[in-house]
Length: 500
Image 1: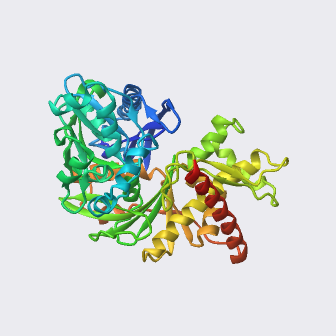
Image 2: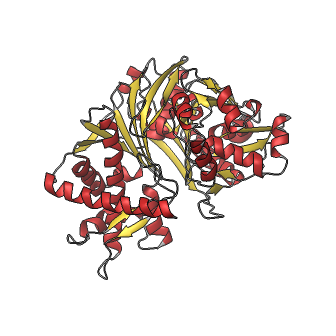
Image 3: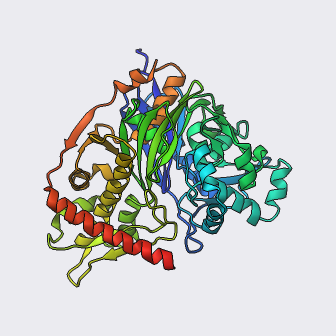
């Protein structure tokens, strides 16, 4: 009997769902299991996840994928984990149980603390050390909030009874039955506590945010030994050989290994990430400097622009307003929308990210008439994401980036109308890869790299294939007219946020 080819398992723990995928060495997804979980909004601006539901859903889809693989005679060689970034959990080291709901990256509850830090003049040192701005988006103020608002949490943390981390750390702890408390450099670089120059937790920042160091995980390379999944969970023991934040994983899945290579991932939010090599590029236009990945102790850096709401705007029209039953309908609806409609949606449901960074901003729709219907709103939602992408890419250009093409992935990248409009507005070619599951794929690739299935990043890069390319078709005057209208709408939203 011929030996089955090696496969790799990726756990992709996202903002609205958990997925597990099994990939071939060539990067083809062979098996996919997915399940959504509950979003909790207990107060205005608060977003939470139930850590137990998150764990049970993630474990269920991972078991399903492994069982399907084993049924086909395929036993994954290793596991890679990729995760929603910045979301924070604190749990009991003895029981593994979370002491409170997870505070999600979209959560805005710490805006007052962030404002106080800015007013005290701390943003320059935080930006210099971490590459990040001060915003509720990042993890440190979320950690501090939990320690200060959960009864006894700070005392227990100082006694060493608690562990804290982003979702990857929580999953590693559970999967290894508490044997490993670790994260990787990409996730650590999103906390506001990790010095991207020294590649370690920063004592000055720990004091500033009042976070005990003993609470935090060990920071490892993105392709590294993170322990083994206990056989009680999956029926087999598998090595965890990679951990990487979702946007960084997508860049790896898109083979963005050369300085200047750029990708944008369209999921719940949109995140554009450009490889800057061994150089940290400090942005003068309110973008972020971050760790793209770290291999063999050597970090590769990136410049990133973050949009908080992308696919979530479509999800709101679908689930909140119930205007249509499937997100896939939006391409047809956008095509069908009245050409005379000038409806603009600024989807600032949880504030605005790059390059505006306004946590108080809230969503608004402009230009509606009695003729406005689901088709016009669908197009406005898609265009709102397109316009935001234009704004953050222009910030990259102002920082000296030469923009010639853009690789896209994520759920919205399968929407032909959206991809063409994106090309029209940002005025560059849009490259869509053969495999759109780039986030999970990046985690799988790094796991394969650790165990020697791939010899180098160049070996991985050979797998990337172009599916199709969209080129700009809109005339310049029409583009500028639409962008001018968008900018007026954004300014109106920001002005309201300033007086609220």
